[in-house]
Length: 490
Ligand code: GLU
Image (tube, rainbow, N blue to C red; front, side, top):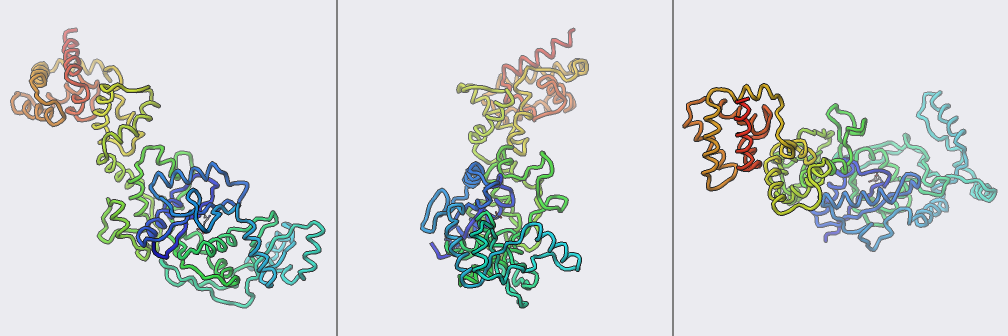
């Protein structure tokens, strides 16, 4: 292991979003590339919104995508505990140190007073912020108020004199922020919990994190965090802020309606493969030198470089994900695809209980064919529906008309004979039959294919006929062809 230490610190306040997973993935890739250590910390100081259930979901989704961590929740390590709710005393200790050194202060202003301050500042055309009323309140006075039962917050003393804080971002280069836009921000809330900006610094410092890679939405927090690092004399890690992920309309990717899928779990549930999402997420903000798109994990790890990440936002292109996923589905081990597809077919009521060997073999054929038609596996039942029901003509009169066509009987007879004579029964050999028929029979290709399709599927369009026959089997194919011919005599 190299000395590089990275972290992924999700808040368990919801299911894990595409954006968070991309952040986790980039940390993971950079850690693997550099033989570094990836730490998983759970940031659960928002007690009302954090749940164990969401924490479990996060762990499960990371595992599903194959992002193993080296240290932290679920793994352990020497810098624990790794759940922020178990570290409150540690944060308090450092807050006390800042209070003792005059670098932080108690503030007793009520929410109403704070609102008024904001309004007044806005009235003067200034940035709404805290007016530092309690900044010079003597410590003894503050402690007296606490003894009387008041619950203050603790604020950080942001330097009053103007100062440029430079963030040396690994992606963006130098980003400079003037302290005059910063407030005396709260580091401990009146409920006794630290704020994000405070806890994250203490943890990153004590867990010896060397590089902080996170979303661009945190860039405005970084100067505040740098001030805390400085005030406590901690080494400042390097920072990299990842570009935002936008939707097709160039708006921030978020759930606007139930049909928008923004959580990783939603993609898993729809039947996207983890390796496809892994590949797709890696290309959200990063690209390989030769613009290669389909890449294995190993290829991505070996090519990935944090300094190659784009500064501009990445666009979440669902068409591209679908294309990629379809490609992975077609190339994956067939039995694996069958096993992922079975729950969808069960849910659709097409199969139930344990399958016999025969049934499994048949299902495997169906999926072998249908997987060419889908972008994700929950589409399997819809595409395969035809094979799970009795034959039904979409339009009976039109079908009969079709079967009465010239030479149709000849086509059906020839097909039956050739099928019966086949030595090996598979989509390729069946395809050969159709090729021969086109050569041998005195009919147009349409007369071969269309009546056969209607006879076998009842429909005007659908999967390739060689595949349909492969799934139906010879007996059922013959039965359906005979059935069609019978109809011509009614
Ligand atoms: N818990 C924070 C979040 O999920 C972590 C941000 C950070 O990486 O510092 O947004």
